Length: 227
Image 1 (cartoon, one colour):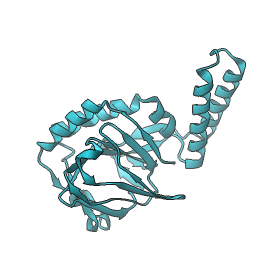
Image 2: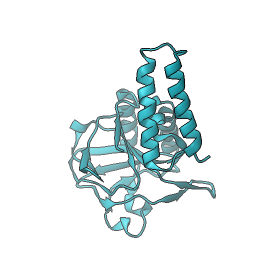
Image 3: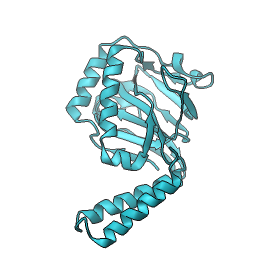
């Protein structure tokens, strides 16, 4: 399931992040990639240990963790600390699949990457190219969003970023370990939760039909969740 969420960060907040990031020292993104990805990764990345990366990363985490649509779709158990990248002057990232397991910074704990997320910090009109192309069952979907918008997609997907030929594409990116690892189960829960929320807008909270549906949702979540 691929999902886009508009303004998970306010536009002005995202643009301000981009302005702060532009002034930072960047390093070659290939330095952070595995042996195969290193050959196709031609972008820049902010050192995740920098104070600005940690401050902005926390702001991104707070925004996504408090967004009902993101939580409904991802059912996050743990979120990898957001990182920041920049594509300019022909920068690109060839076809690759994200690593299945990543070590959480500063710990010995491993995070299973069920979902990948990109939060765009530059407006689409500010650069040419830079589409995130994600391969799925229905073919390739090209995603290019405005500042503050986010795309959520399965980490199992083959994906790439097309060359940026004008301007600069800045974004935050991170991975999610879901409470429900199976993507089919997670998609079913998402559809059910969204239907319940739509019904809840028209029915009183005590309506028995709504209560029963909510009970079905939570019992399925209880059945499938790994904690």
